[in-house]
Amino acid sequence: MVEKNYLRKDELIFFSKDESKAIQTVLDLILLRPTLENMGSQILGMPVTLTYRALSYFYDYAFYKRLSFAKQKNEALAFFDPVFRQYPRLGSKISESRSPRELTLDFNGGWRFKEVSD
Image 1 (cartoon, rainbow, N blue to C red):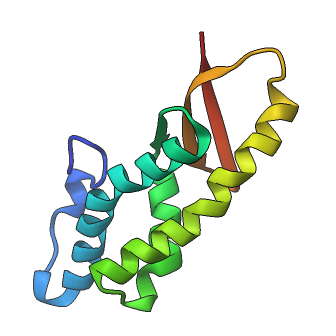
Image 2 (cartoon, rainbow, N blue to C red; image 1 turned 90 degrees about the vertical axis):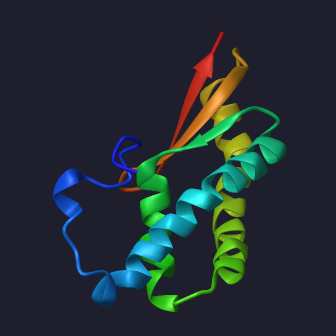
């Protein structure tokens, strides 16, 4: 998790009995990431990657709901679906002359789409 920048080394000191829900939620999100990226890829017709900040934004949104893994998965799919579906409208305004082959979804004060073109 440290190598993939999900956790910093200085965050590894914790009391698992006190923070087990937070840790489990992060682990669940790591497991959900490929599912979410696959859903985005199917909607947009190109490979999609979610950044740590995009997942972190969802984490902040859903953490206090205390969801089981199955409910968290459904919540994440419902959360990211409209974000992916807004891209074709926004993308057509941004890049009419080129067709991206890959897309990265980030969150930094708002949703950011980074296109990788040929």
